[in-house]
Image (spheres, rainbow, N blue to C red):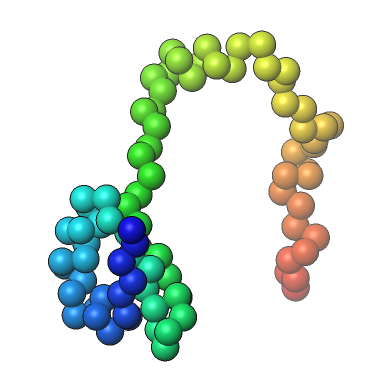
Amino acid sequence: MEKYISATEANQRFSEMLREVSNGESFPVTSRGKVVAHVTPPKQRQKTKTTKEYLASLEGRPPLTTGPWKREDLYDRSDRHIP
């Protein structure tokens, strides 16, 4: 069950609240009786793929096309006001 905590109390007990959050608790933070924030543990990150796994995941994907670019298109300076 979530424990509601006022913003004032959260400010006064911040370190204690973080310890509880690190143990899986979550806290809706209220201000003047309305929930204004939720302090929750972070979602578990997925393991980063190795380079070999990443390159293998790209196999079979169609190449990205960007269109017929010219060097001048990349360095267009028409928006700059040069005297």
